[in-house]
Amino acid sequence: MDEIFGVILIAIAEFLGELFAELIAEAVVAVIVRFFRKIVERSLAIPSVFAVPAYFILGCVFGFVSVLLVPHPIVHPSRIHGISLLISPVATGLVMAFVGWELRRREKQAVRIESFKYGFTFALGMAVIRLVFAR
Image (cartoon, rainbow, N blue to C red; front, side):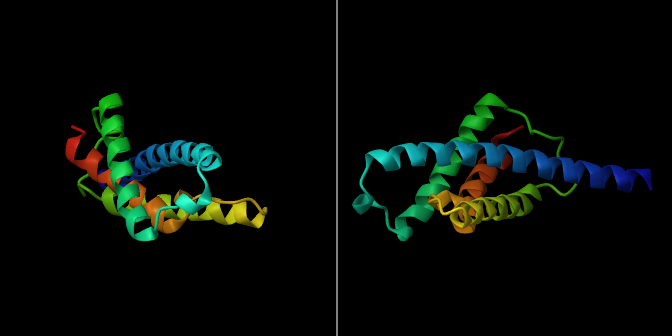
């Protein structure tokens, strides 16, 4: 029974660790996008067809940077290897969608990464790189 409880706790810790890392990275990207949006006119907005792969690639880049900074898994891997590849991007996308919803509710303009689709895509890219390269 203790072993099952330990596995559950490790899985939860892995999920929360990945979620936290992805949210921090996405917050940094949101700040950078807000800064550059003030510089670049809206007419230069990237179409969604190109933005989705761009956010995935950006997530991969942040994943590589995170592996350079923390080369080992954030939390000891659980028996269900790769579970964070599924759960963590979905949770991160939901949190970013909530952030975007809250900003729009307060009549502020949200950036693309503050939506489920782009938040999920960014987090998936980051999670894939961390899964493959963090040892």
